[in-house]
Length: 208
Image (cartoon, rainbow, N blue to C red; front, top):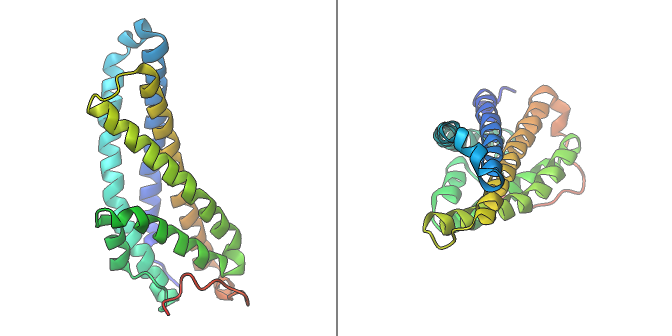
């Protein structure tokens, strides 16, 4: 079976990897800013260029992600028509304010439980489920610190440093989750026996 999300998924993974590298470099420049400011002054232009490039790459990654997650759910519907989340429903879970706080968890937990149902995807499903709380902790942690710093409620070098650590870890978590899903779909595409469902399977992904 040919799955449509594969090609775009590879592009998305590449952009996310670049974002991870850029975020790591910004963490390094921030370390100099906090602990060796004189050295940072020599690389300030480099830091500014990194920041702009990082924002561009992250924006493109978001656009690619929205299209890709739609394709992912369209592919699951081809394999399992009674899967609970439709492609459009996945986007609504992301875009609707406040609801998306639960929606993203629902998308990934439903998918993780779905993978667990298939013997050859069980390990990937469990890995995805373990990554969800890490993703949420980093998402909220970095987001809260970013807002506090942007609005000037906190002006502290240590907090700035912690923010960049969380942001770097956050990008890694997104990359790993995306890689996990792509690996699962690769198995599903390459090995038809993947679709042999386990006898005892969770029903969290079934639209009853």
